[in-house]
Image (cartoon, rainbow, N blue to C red):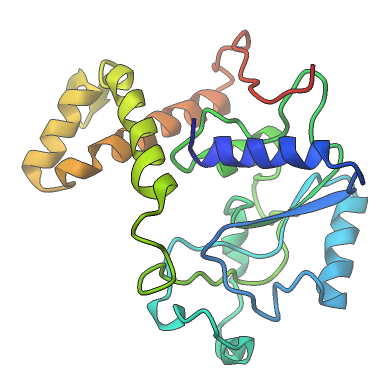
Length: 248
């Protein structure tokens, strides 16, 4: 079992079993770069996180996440001082999901639920669904996000992402392939073309939109957007047991 949602749910389950019972944990993606604006040990950042948690916000994002990774900042020994000139996020960015660098307050699980992250969202939609469930993403300012920009590095080069990384190169890929065996049968309507999701992937490949090797992840991303849409419309089935790690 793998996937971004499963990894986050597993991390929540792990935090829930720690004997010293932490009141707060920090989840950080492996490509996030430490900057002064997002350093959780900074007195100002620490204070801002606590203020939001004290208002009842379960998950607090330490900044606004962006999809672009920065190749200029790929060296691991990088100094935070070079980020002084990076622009702060615009106010319109605060409708983005709480992701990549997140502070989460206890309790991390209940006796009937794994926590705030759905394990079945494996391709990247787990942050958006989490925010949707908690009511973090509304119109206007996202009250769960601090005013900083999350910087990410490109994971390429020696000693950054090993070539034998079993999770990235094997387990994750196998998960997506297993999902595709079922998800390819889902009927979809794309720009007037009514077909199965598997057929749509073949159309995308033929048109050059994606490579053959990308169809599994692309398919999973489409399915997760459908799931998100169903949640927004209040039409997602309520009788599905999505717990995996919950405490018995």
